[in-house]
Image (tube, rainbow, N blue to C red; front, side, top):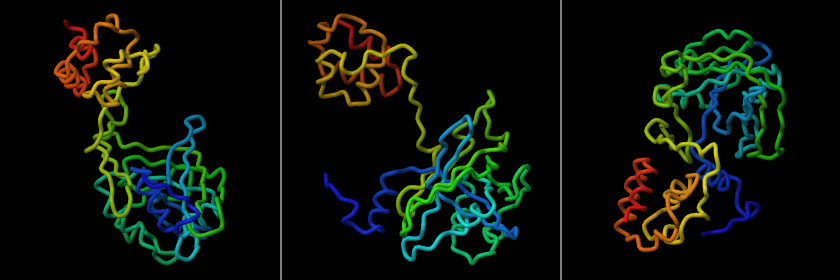
Length: 276
């Protein structure tokens, strides 16, 4: 493993490491207007949700590394204190990428990228009609993280209205991760299509799981079980039998138990491990 002092490499190289490692990143497709009402649309992957009450999202348009200039989105939100954050689905990604082109000030990226402007309810910037979820936001604060190229600017947004396409909801009215079909940014030119890589991990018990440290030594030191396997086996309230009963379990038994864990069957895995 290499160790790097960020002060000893170029900002461009550090930027590449950061974006390659911190991934996938959700995309804020931000629509804004300037003081004269000119519309701008641009994507940002320095983005996430940070609070539900109040509903707060933060995205960060960084100063350009090459020349230390700022982006129109940043200038617009400072001037108007409003933004719409549109979520990006797979069927929008090529148009969204086109909208990231650095067009001249005053050019409407909705038109350049072929998106449809939908009027917002409480803010001036329009919504992207093709987006499955749109968040109308007031900007509470903008925090500059530096004055040099590559420095971020945290735009702290409070959601005042949201719009959800009913087609992405499941039978219980929750957003279905397959139906919404979101995309995310990786390093370089790479993207991630979320629905092709999703898997479910049940939350830990409402009561306390025993923890990996409480597993029998024969299981903790197994040549078969991975860290993921141990995490699943440790998420039980108590050991099914006395720990001494595991000492003689063969690697074949561990392999059979692991197959059950791969299918999410923790109780079945324990049954195999406790069979004699």
